[in-house]
Length: 243
Image (cartoon, rainbow, N blue to C red; front, side, top):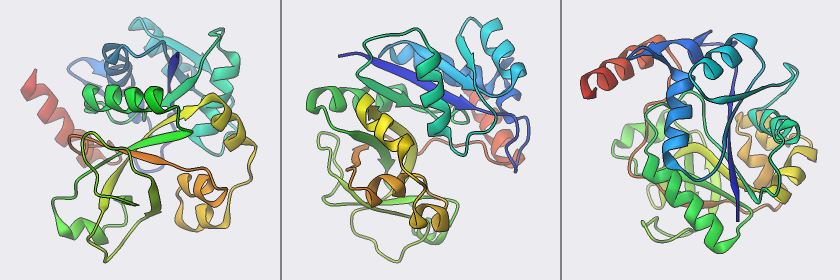
């Protein structure tokens, strides 16, 4: 079984334009994510970007990158184009890593991949425990409700993804890493955006609305994603301190 890791990236993020090329310890955020993906050692790694500057940066740091269209509505459409353009054959699973999470735990990526390979599921993702109850009402933190309590060694289905909730049982902080079987990815990109997906701005609801199960693997912790300048400065401080 073969996994290909694809990291979608673009310069035009609304809240923090140009964030893929912001530097931490002298390396761009997108190249930090590529480095983590390579260290996970689960398969070839490709950055899929619509901007030549990202492609140039990633390649100058020794990683692989593919230029994609700038017309894509979602990151999943972008990774599918990169898959088709890559000359990598016999791929069974595609791991979609977020290009703005340089602090992602390598072990979480490896564990998700192992569970997908072992069970040949359609679609898997990550979630972490919510330690602060205030986050249940924070709409910027996406939540997933699972059918059973998440444990390190299980892989229950996600029943619902939502932005705010009063529920406290089996609810976790969703981390936007996805592992698709190749067939599921091909099916997913052919589907129209669902009403639920558009209303909640959550692409994963398209899968659930079309009876594609999403299984959830427990992550060690929620990595700090870089959405704002504050996020970037906070993460930069942590990563430079660790270094």
